[in-house]
Image (cartoon, rainbow, N blue to C red; front, side, top):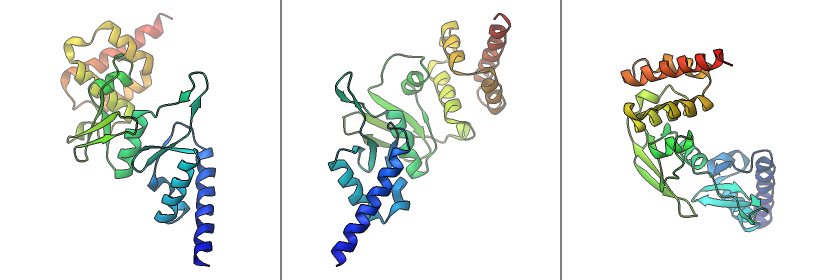
Length: 218
């Protein structure tokens, strides 16, 4: 009898999880805690294991999953997005993170080089996490008061500028940034980085001015 009750609970949990993931983008990455409302830890774990066996979910890393997403054009499974994984991983631990170095540049289209290791600064501990496909995500501990009030996108720009350095901010780099940030977004960012490095604040001002000139010449 107990076994039958447990089986019914697992099926119910599995159905709830299945219905939930159907309402979200296939690229979304989930942690086990995302499904905690649908049952006990044990029933959720068993349901996820069953969905993985059935091919509905793919394990990205230990405790993290995504929906199956097969691309018929290239005849292979769509790889998980390392950035989405990093954000899901950080959220599960309550960390504040931001893309770091080449990862920030790649995210904003300022570099076409795909990092060997996707790096993030974090207010959590130093940690390297391996994805099931062999790629690695590295979280580097840093006191990040400078970006604590910034959105993820704003923090990525700040990290990208620091990675490039003042001397490498070329007209082409500014053009690429302006393709991703509106004047309104840059003005909001300027208010938040007044206490940042002087050259970064001045660069944000320069981007706003360039944005205004670009609009006036249309």
